[in-house]
Image (cartoon, rainbow, N blue to C red; front, side, top):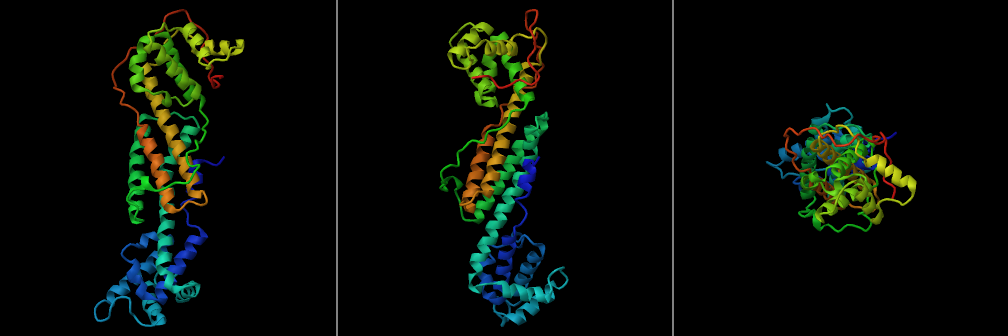
Length: 376
């Protein structure tokens, strides 16, 4: 099975076209070195994907600087003598043979287009950089899709990584003279949600918290300050949490029977006997200790953040391969996804010692270890 890490990783490798554009640019600079002055202020050696090309561009800059005294930079005479002079600086670099420099000049279709080629090099490097930094989020996203338990430290590092990637995107946009990514017009169809599978472990955490709130509604006011319905990764359970908060706001009696009645009126619970039985078994008081409810809140927060990160990685990956998008639009869409992720940063849950919840009653069957989504 291909992971998100694999998919993103394939996108930060240079394409054949990336290499061909770099060759055309270097060939143009060897043929018409005066064009170096038009690109050197914003084109960096690190923009080239191939290390040998980085070395060659650095050598071109060094040669131009050396000529800046008695002879103006970028006016080193005919192309062949320039190629020979540059070759003396790079002959130690594997792959940079004299014949390769000759091939670069032959591969350049229009030497006067060096500035256009340089812009394409920067844009290709921007695309690869976006993929590379998105890969830092993909590892946690893969763990979420596998339903693995994520340590609190990993969830916290998610937002630190997100802020770093946002900074990278801002810097990349500045290089492309895009001061405000939010102002970049985006094509239609970029707001489509990416449906995600919900791991059984995450559903169980949500079920345990909802069960605890139904059994002890006095906890609803505190929990609602820490969670939003959107924090529940299953839509049915999100609606049930919203229903509980509404019932609490209205001062209604809350127990399993009244909740089932309101859930059916809200279209959340199907009227057939099987659906009612499944709902009662899933959310009935288990009759024993359950994890501390603040611990459940924190687990749900972390799962929600990771689900949002997973969606962001999927959408950014789709953006990188979607035809018709220019580099500025790619950066704008990535920035939007990461802003959404940052907004999901969970509220701080105080690490105070909470008594274990021991609900009243003699007990009912526990929820299934792999609960299905609530039947609507």
